Image (cartoon, rainbow, N blue to C red; front, side, top):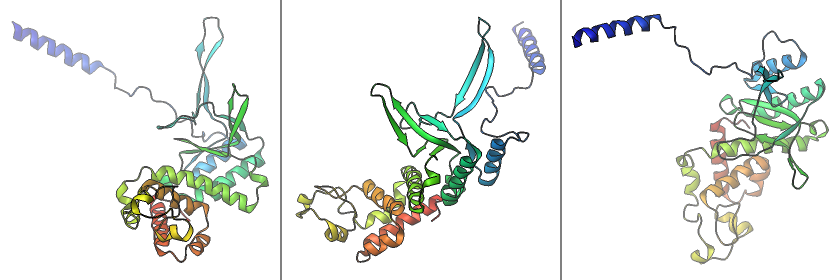
Length: 290
């Protein structure tokens, strides 16, 4: 009898399964970064062309979608808004980021020119941001102190936001400095995720000094040429830098000082030149272009 019940139950299960609709993933949603091919307004054309050229989504505000989801009990519309949430990252949170948006086609095209020719031209496809938000100003407001904090740029998890309001009046040198500060931030974040073995050769020159107190080594605090002779370009009051701080110092030098100037300054210190070249090669291997 039990065997008969088992066979009947199995048949019912097979029949019912055959009548089920094909399973489809839930929670699927549209790509709110991508511009519809049917959109013909000037801003949409700019954004679509930018993505087709650079493989990076272009934004002019932080709202990805604002759509009606229904009505409330009193009959008023219920809206759902999704923003880029630029301040969120895996390790930190900058809350309350706000933006003044770009107004007018000319300033938008100026921002695009900066993003393409100053930033993306130095980034390989593997390290380019997922999207770029071009804003007039980026800031936070402290209500308690009634103060504003302004950002030249903000590098989030899926978006790099750039403040463009001053770009039209910047000199060549100011454009260079602005560009390098953005590239340095991108490089610094990428370097943090590299395996320590990548820096084995770099560390080898100064391995006996990292983190050591000058007093323990029987030396007085080295500065200038005395410091450079050890292979360092930065130090602390009482000790040599750690491995990570040494990498940071050379990475900053790579982006903050023009190569010719750097190599002229440290021409008499071959270890420093070698360490500089190693860091440059590591950064280039990540996808940066100099």
